[in-house]
Amino acid sequence: MATACELCDESGGEILFRNEQLRVVLVADANYPGFCRVIWNAHVSEMTDLAIEDRSTLMRAVCQVEAAQREVLQPQKINLASLGNMVPHLHWHLIPRFVDDAHFPHPVWAAPVRQTAGEMLAHRRALLPALRAAVIRCVSCTS
Amino acid sequence: MATACELCDESGGEILFRNEQLRVVLVADANYPGFCRVIWNAHVSEMTDLAIEDRSTLMRAVCQVEAAQREVLQPQKINLASLGNMVPHLHWHLIPRFVDDAHFPHPVWAAPVRQTAGEMLAHRRALLPALRAAVIRCVSCTS
Image (tube, rainbow over all chains, first blue to last red; front, side, top):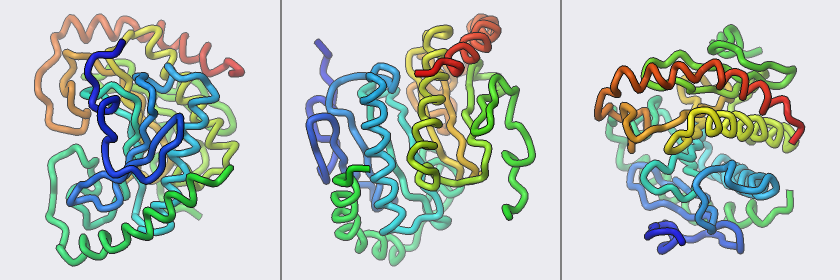
């Protein structure tokens, strides 16, 4: 049995979508409105711990959320990452990146290089209701 | 036509495998022996710029390289990331992580927290011939 794991015990964010296999959550990050995670519900560590068909299911969801983020937020770039060094429970970070964000062009885990203007962050936060709807629509697609 | 792109113009590392669609390269990173990248040959930016069958092809290769890294290096964790803020040409970083590596448990893009012992790095470098062989074998699998 797994020891205490925060992604087994907690949702990991505001749940936008959940089925038996995975969930999509919106991350509350003041610098990164629209940051989402796709979390495999069962406790496994690595992509290659999943059966091949489950890897496809997970990456299809990741791409569907990416599509929703691109449609609504129109970022400069999407950053995808499965790290899990601290929480080895398979989860994907999906981070919409903008040229004026706190770390661009560096990864969000590097030192910040600027403070994004408050009105730009407010503009992006105002798009979150549309993003929630787009995620639900995209993840519910069959393709 | 794309403007100058280093992953269009250069291999991006020591090529371990290449076919018409993608290539796998070994990255020369003194702190991270076994760091590989899977690079889509054509210049596209995002996973969702690819056709769905190409996304599957790419992620299958990513998982095959991850399997080779786990088999040979037996890392604590594999870190996967598609960032591309500086080089927006679709490529996946596959980084075997160890509890004694320069950044663990933080992402490799954060500030380093230690220097890994030279003999441990030498031990991991000594596994690179086996990793090269395992990558070729795993990526040549049909599943």
